[in-house]
Image (cartoon, rainbow, N blue to C red; front, side):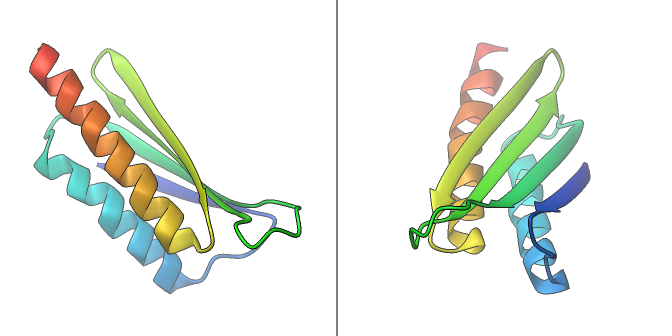
Length: 96
C-alpha cells in the first residue's frame, strides 16, 4: 500500500512518520485490497491541549474511507483514527 504523510503547520520527525505508517499498514491485515492511504497531521491554532489532529483517508476498490480524530498527541490521534478506519474497513469487507 502506498501511504503519503503530510504535516501541516509543523515539521514531523521521522519517528512520528514511521509510527503513522506502521499503524496505517496494519489495516492490510483486515482488508488486503487497500489501494492507497493519505494521512494529514495538523496542528490546530487553538490554545487547547488537544490541538493535534490526524486525518486518515484510505482508498479501497469503489470506495474512499475517512477518519478524523483530535487528541493531545499525534500518536493518540493517529491510533484512534486508524481504529475508526478498521471498523469501516471491516464493514466494507462484510458487504462484499
